[in-house]
Image 1 (tube, rainbow, N blue to C red):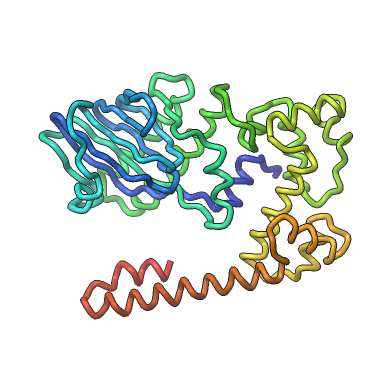
Image 2 (tube, rainbow, N blue to C red; image 1 turned 180 degrees about the vertical axis):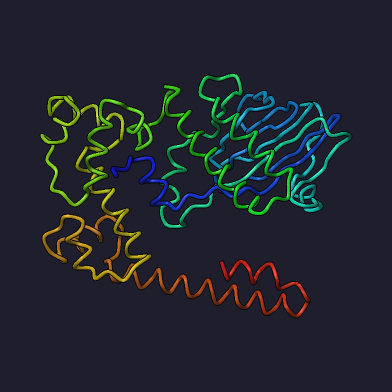
Length: 335
């Protein structure tokens, strides 16, 4: 079955939505969150609040609204903008069962999670997202999101077998749907692969390149797939993607190469042929120009980094075990 560029890219990045919990609040309250440094997705399940990112106008959020943050800005959530914000880290340190409580009452319920990405290549997604994507519950694109949020609330309200997995899967679908809504809304998207996906005229050429990245595509073949002349296609593609068509193909091949070198033991020569290079040396030269080091050195450095991370985690477990709190870290390493 043919894939599509958005699915390909999220799979490449191993993008996973991890539901981290939420908070219940009431009365007049305000919480300041530090810069997350990771993509955040959240939804207002009940009530209303204000979202304020540094340097931006406040955004009013209502029940059913979904927000995607690129993680590069601190932010404030508040019922009343005149209230002095309290440090959210302190509030969440006392949460029970994944849910924190703040203020007086329970007329507000907020769910949140983050998007886990491969450390090598995570900027590929972060760099094409605006500081905030706000999808209102009243928007046409929000119909599916409202259904997913309702299902997520039902799962979180029960202790049925598999509810944890089901909740994360529903949150994952909310993340994909939020990206779809952003792309389909037709708002101004900065040049990059996400804007290229949103351009229906060049999307056929993108699918061709993603479905067969090892083929020696020509500009003429790609322009024909898009139903345009070579000149018109090349100009439109560059305006949308920020790079020329064959430059995009090269970049995609390099992303695939990095994943293959990280995850498998495929010989570099075989990897080169699978990506359309006639020799290992031609591929190695292209990879070194794009990444900065040769493929074999890249694979070795990734393996050494992974081993070091596991050793550090094992040391942490040993130290925590001496104080009787090793369980959480042990599960983290095992996973």
